[in-house]
Image 1 (cartoon, rainbow, N blue to C red):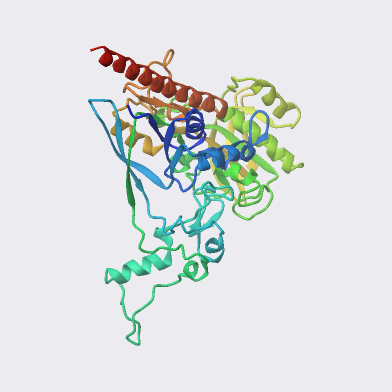
Image 2: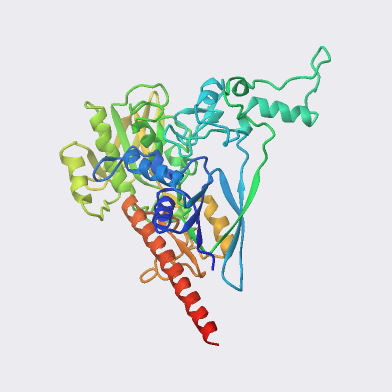
Length: 466
């Protein structure tokens, strides 16, 4: 039996599971659709309730995973298909690595191409509050530290393809062959790593088990019209605020309004933005919002000493060691004002953002003219989870999260033999729970491989006696 494991997703869950298995001597195929590993944890500033630096915890693990001899890392890649053999239960996976237009074997990660690229676009990693170059890595701590070229926004590639398709003339006004626009990265790359002819590559890997650790996304603000529908610049989601808080973020850790760059003196945090909302198909609690909102409010007060933070909440759910004390700290030591009630409307009023809600404890309508509003939007499944569920014939619940074989006695197992789950692919989780479950999934795989060894040995002994 093949004793290699395929892990789909290289956030903290996928990384932890990969390291546990690889350190036990088994090979891991780790697939991540982004150019580098780390997932959403790579976007965070600090973690609750200890306020430890997120990168200080994550970076040693990403570096170890990136250089481990037992881990085959496929970044900028997606699972295209997977077939299970009915005879031995092995999986044959086809993995598509997207063209980066940079030869990573030649690239040294020096960063010159990013520095010289003259064009910027909005960065998904920075959640829209900061730009990135068309040639980019996700972060300064990216693993692997190899850039990719965003083909959809690269002037050179687009003009090259337009000429090849006959959409623009292939000759200049003097009748000479026309040259595509830009190409600055080619001129300055010291190793000649830019490869305009690079194509997607297909790899096949055979494995004996699979762990799905596809992670989560956030409910889009565009689906919250009463909160501005994503059209108000100074209404952002919590992950965008994390990028503001992060020292490696677009504001270098300074709190600034996206609209004008001013320091906000009044910030309103709105919890349950999309969560616990059956009308929008999100009836569940997102579990982590109460704690990360308290963390963000505390960190805001540490950076803006004369600022005031308000938190609108339905009720506080803080189930974890030290969590209740952390919330008390936010209210008592950092003077964060907690208002029990639902926000009904958020709209632009001059250069302010007016937040209208109800304090259900005093039964009063409250209006706050805020400088910045942060929405704790619902945790939802990754869009790619549906594709993984289809490829592996996995069960999902009505919200799109994977369903465990048995929530009480086999929370990491699936309905399919030799397929396991880890992390927020099963539902909202904080980092400690995610890491614990990832190690649990790894233990399941190791036990399975050990069982395979015993079974194979027993069969050999039987054959010897015949």
